[in-house]
Length: 197
Picture 1 (tube, rainbow, N blue to C red):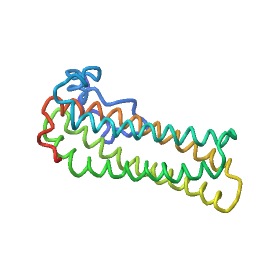
Picture 2: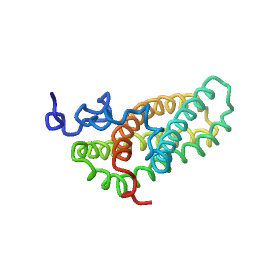
Picture 3: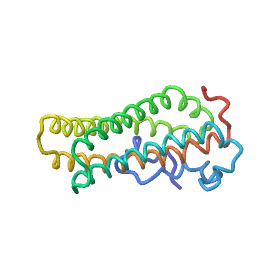
């Protein structure tokens, strides 16, 4: 049986298809379908999962908006307004969320169970990888908004942005799922009392 020590040190976000088995030890005891019924679910876990759902919904909405523009179902000005508002919200909220996790929550959770402690290093590396994808997301969004402000056609820019959102969404989904399957079982087992509020 593989141990975490036999796995690649970085286990990169862009190429993995889930958490390595050695890090799923608590998930076996606390499967996803039982989370909501657990006594430690209400409060911190529920709020944190709702934030993850918001990020999923925002990327889906941004992707659908770009499709609507490309298909002629949304006016360019309306698309630009929504892109500026919801794209900015997505980037700012995700950066803030990751900062809180990296500086406050993960260091505490990492100390709770040595069997999954190295998984938090993977999540930290994910955050750095996602930053790179977010920078490209912002560049594509700004390029589209500049074209719109200059009165230029934005269909091609919207197509490029659509592709960017699709790639980012896939990487983000991989990260959020893995993060949930590592973090939630730790909190359900050990409680959220040690976490900063």
